[in-house]
Length: 420
Image (cartoon, rainbow, N blue to C red; front, side, top):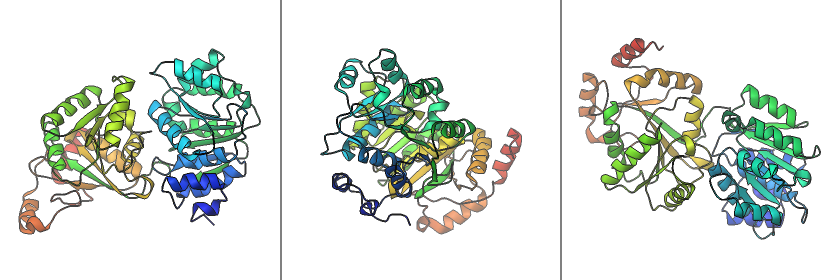
């Protein structure tokens, strides 16, 4: 039977106090399944999308099993610096009052503070593979005391080409250790890696791989390419759109959209890999604290960005990979909260849209607004909308229609593109 309260998990009083300080009362499904196995010393392979509370699922057992004064004991590898920072912050919060020291190691910043932290012998290190290997080659890291290894978002690390660095770390670790691997998806490469590095692991699936977290309302908005900025501005007229994360496909597109929003008087900032680390950190801080309402980002933010209260995610450009769609919209509706995910779909995106729905194994609501729709609204819809008047408003703040089938205009365009 799964735990309904953190006290059911037999945690230490220090950990329960930290959990209470964070405002958590009930463990999420992945936490309820993974924490008991971790506390028992079992290896764990977790299949869980973002927003399910997986950081606590691996960090709570790691901290509970720590032994004081033995150097580096917990090593967590993450694909991005943003995720490494977030995991380290969560670990520090969960270790509050215990004297356990946590440090994050990632690229894009100076080596000095990281070298100092390694020399001091922090018990928990959360790192990106590239920078961590740099320190390992310089013999600044002693892996012989590591008792607990976590690979977080393993699928993303392999996608980013970090397999050689992961293999180097694995070769230096003690064979007697506890290993946890978490991944939103389980492609062949990740599956093989999990089997190879774990022993008699407990396999846990909090939600079917490739699905989205519960509590996220989704919609596809039909739009002409040149009307995208105007459509976003229209949606932002709704005061309920109070903390909005917008994904663009390119860095240049993010900069252009950020400039447009600011010209319109909307407090916005931008996040992508061409920005210096200090500027990226500042943008995240401003967004998290509500100093800016809109954060425009490339896929650098689709994982590892854990900001409470994101009300809406907008796919300004349709993601090329259906798995990226899942991770993008997972920035809202986190840990039991609700959220809305909107995707702008042009005529050229119809093929990708249908592929996405096939992968999701569900249809997503279509929203057609005549002044933005690339095909215009059918006359019958215009008449029915006029009859409904202001009483008919979608959950997204304006009149819309839902349809499981394509309109005639969409079908014609899709056939022209060679789609289904």
